[in-house]
Image 1 (cartoon, rainbow, N blue to C red):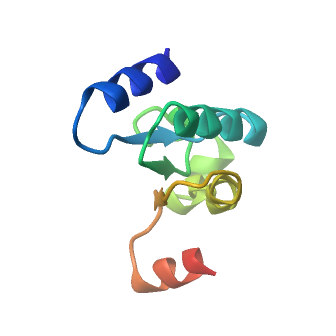
Image 2 (image 1 turned 45 degrees about the vertical axis):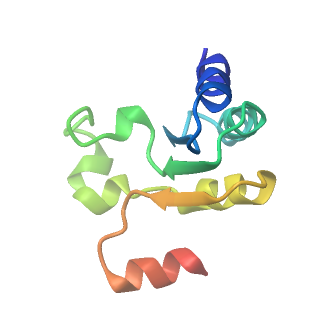
Length: 108
């Protein structure tokens, strides 16, 4: 469905199509989705480093992760880096970037 939607938009519009996703349950699933989006014609991909279940409003606040506070649900920048390595389109990192130090750490 995602590939068909992106392809329809990319082929039917005169402006670049960008897509934003969240990481999936496995790195492999995330990479497969990123490659499918690229193949469908997306001009750029924004990747949020948390799964949909890690969204603060959906997170299990009784778990050890939530007990650690918002940083316990830190975005997985390693998955975003893996996406960047497999696709040829620009990748925009999203999630957990709140300070200049976060930006510098993300870029390393």
